[in-house]
Image (tube, rainbow, N blue to C red):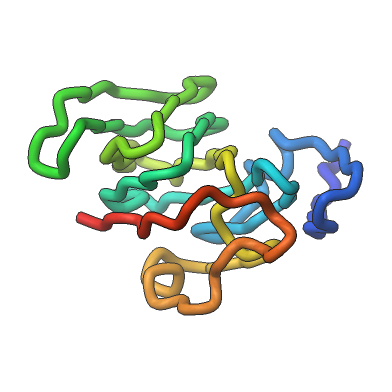
Length: 159
């Protein structure tokens, strides 16, 4: 039986359902925002072999990440120079990142890591697709929607 390509459209804070495993595995982009609510956001990611998410900390955002496929190394800590949490992760693993924690996931496998992440509160522009990490890093038009509920702004930190 052939697998049908899922086309995800971020419809904002309206009811939505889709096969997240299939959508995550089919996603070719570094980051693709799949759904944006007032209080959280679902984003699909593809991390190439040897690539990483990029060392960062979100001062006001908790984050849940789940690997559908691939092998990675997750590092976390209270400062970018003090990453005391260092674990290997693979298919089916989740990574829980408390707000303000420095974190990174590096692809240490032979295939891309396919994962999805849930940000609370929303962290990116609804429907945003960034094909590569370099494009995402340079993107100046990636703020959450005005209708999303945001805490007092503290800028993200990057390593």
